[in-house]
Length: 332
Ligand code: NAD
Ligand code: TDX
Image 1: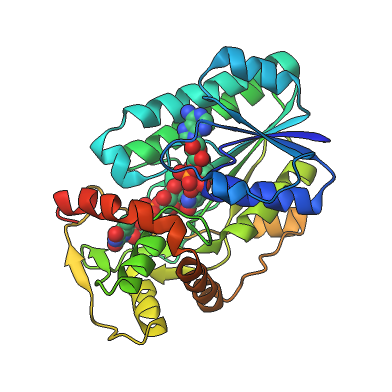
Image 2: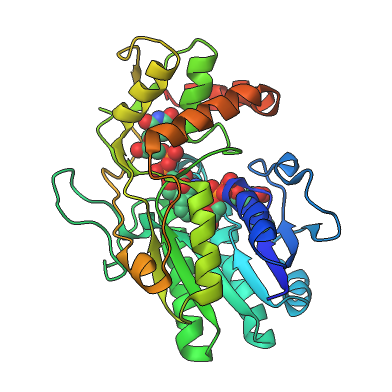
């Protein structure tokens, strides 16, 4: 796999994966990214220009995708509309990018025989009750709640069908909530870090008891690379690092880091259809591919992420006010 095509490689997780792949393989990488509001070319700065190039384009552009895919040995597909709240305001770009984009890529790899890895989410499984001892496994039935998660579920089904019907050489990973550098301030952890950094209160939806299973984005990258290199074609792997925390626990940890009162929280309007809890059982990935997370201490990973946002205020300050204005207009 000397030539990798990474879709969405200018986004939060995709850009981290590009850095990871360059550091841990000999591959050259082409990033295919539409550079939407969520992208950041800064996240790719400093990479060796003889090994990385950026093509600005749409994964749903089948002519472009056919040509690019045929020039590579493998595709790692991160490109997506990724924010649940945006999908509730306007589902249409989610349907176009997440479904039609994945369809265009699958047709291209069908023609060229190129290896394909599809990056997906645990949200395709719906949610768990807070007191349910179960966690999601590769056998959990699909039950998505939001337009975003339904579009990702649909894209997973397309991949599975293209493997079974057309023999496409594909794998799928479904990962839990990522945190780390370069995540857009619309998302929970960066929103609350930057709120508290500006002296504002964290904004928590509903009662704040919703649980997410946090994993550092670097650990997601190492899992994707392991699956790309050693995964079994046609298989799905769940990716998680045993990082279950309620939203309240997370904002209290952020407030503590800044020396602020842990109860200085603003409870705002709940998200429609808000999933209660996600939890990943990642035993298959660990036992079959020998993968292990490096960031097993969430509090240490969160502290490093807070410090990163404080050191990169010039990166997020420009979009913070507009992001907060959009939330405020919805009572969030
Ligand atoms: P992101 O929103 O930060 O980045 C998405 C990237 O895709 C951006 O660079 C954007 O410009 C690009 N993009 C969007 N539409 C495109 C199109 N039509 N053509 C080409 N490029 C396009 O998202 P993220 O959080 O980095 O998520 C990356 C992937 O990982 C997604 O598939 C998402 O479903 C999945 N995932 C995310 C998480 C998480 O916690 N963020 C967890 C599990 C899985
Ligand atoms: O201001 C907020 N306040 C709040 O309480 C925001 C933005 C979120 N929340 C809550 C909603 C969720 O319970 O925090 C939790 C996390 O919210 P998000 O960061 O929006 O993530 P989530 O909806 O869980 O989805 C994320 O993980 C799975 C990614 O955005 C998806 O792309 C991924 O598939």
